[in-house]
Length: 66
Image 1 (cartoon, rainbow, N blue to C red):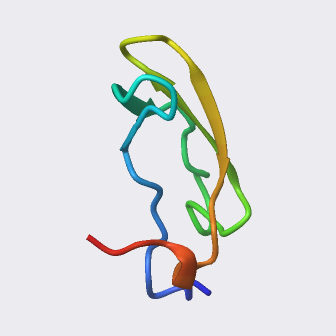
Image 2 (spheres, rainbow, N blue to C red; image 1 turned 120 degrees about the vertical axis):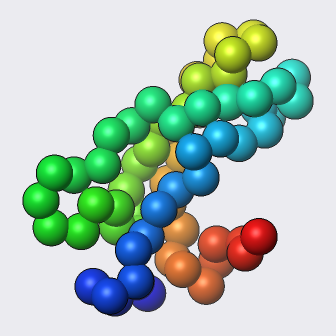
C-alpha cells in the first residue's frame, strides 16, 4: 500500500480498451492530503473513439512498473 512518502499516481495515458488509441486521464487529484489512493475511481477518454473508461486504482503491488 502507498505510504505518505511515496506518491501514488495513475498513468496519465493508457491504451483504449476498444480501439487501441490513446486514452487520457480526465480525473483531477485531491487538492489536500494524499493526491490519489488505492480504490479511487479515475476516468479516461479515448481521443480516437471518444469512449470513456472508469477504472479503480489498484493496490501498489498490483500496479505494473515501467
